[in-house]
Image (cartoon, rainbow, N blue to C red; front, side, top):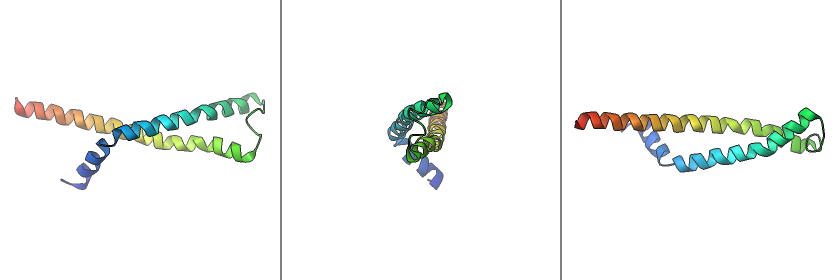
Length: 93
């Protein structure tokens, strides 16, 4: 078994953890959306209160990259698994 297959076998055993990570990242987006709306409406209730808070809430956009990559990997893993199952069915038929 090559390193590529070993990696995907390991990753497929961690799918639940990946989905939990994606959920956490998506939930973190809620305060970010409120902060962003506050900036757009220029209300100043959440945004521009403190530069550190603004920095963290702006930085949440960057954490979405992890979620995007993770979803792509899950999709690839599921497609790969379905193809392997189809090939297995064809070989036994």
